[in-house]
Image (cartoon, rainbow, N blue to C red; front, side):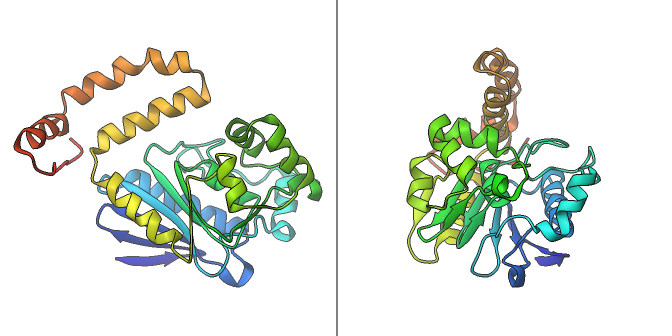
Length: 262
């Protein structure tokens, strides 16, 4: 099944949801409609119990050239661009938070909002030729997707500030060394590799995957102490789930488990 709404494509493959940035003629630069469509797609993913892992990729040669400032800057300046409480924010800064795993596959230009989107993903697969830049301050604005927070936490203060404050370009290997991407792949195989990982995640127990993400997000957003304090609350319902029983049976019977998310 596949369909497209506005400037973001959608395709369901079993338990995997493919979300494609589909404004290739503009190097997938984000205007307000594209941001809205991406938020709608992620909200659809969040609400559908059959979907267990999502992959965000881009049509064309480039992941995204960042924000379409010609269209967006007046709206950002007036404060009229926002997310409603029931919509998943692709950048995870305000609004509804994502609870399911997200993989991002990047190539070509991955600028500004593209970096911020991948920083809010759980896994990032980068083509070896990908170029990155966090150039907002050179355009007179602030990284609205939280790069000043996540970039610093991932790469460390000195490395992050070099790129956030100067807007210098950096390549996929440098992004990997700064813990911004999970893997760097050769050729045009970033989406293939992302789908391979998505299949593995989708075959795992959905409740356990979501619990692991929730614990990690608590540690990131609050503190390790908060995350540690909530571990038992996450573990108890998992141990009483049908999936946990299926996992033990599959181990004893030496077969692949068939998890149902119950």
